[in-house]
Image (cartoon, rainbow, N blue to C red; front, side, top):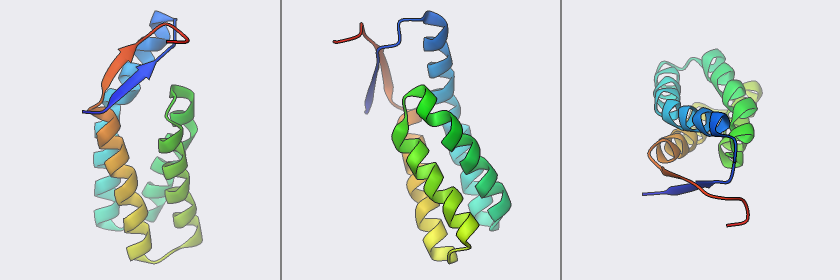
Length: 108
């Protein structure tokens, strides 16, 4: 199991981080459905939302992967290329959503 260490001291923000990670499973499913139906508009919208929020919750990698999906939709890449990008993002979302969250003091 993946472990995510968070050094955010504010308990309210810790709860937001936990909620963000829990909701990644639902986001992964939304990406999967949009990919299966070939809905590039929905994929682009979902990717844009995740790209904008992921970094703020300490998930730079998810933001980067979401940015790739968003750009692939804008560039109208082949179905195979888009599926590859979406599958990588789904995998990262599922991995992060099942990660153990550890809150630690800064500098630990």
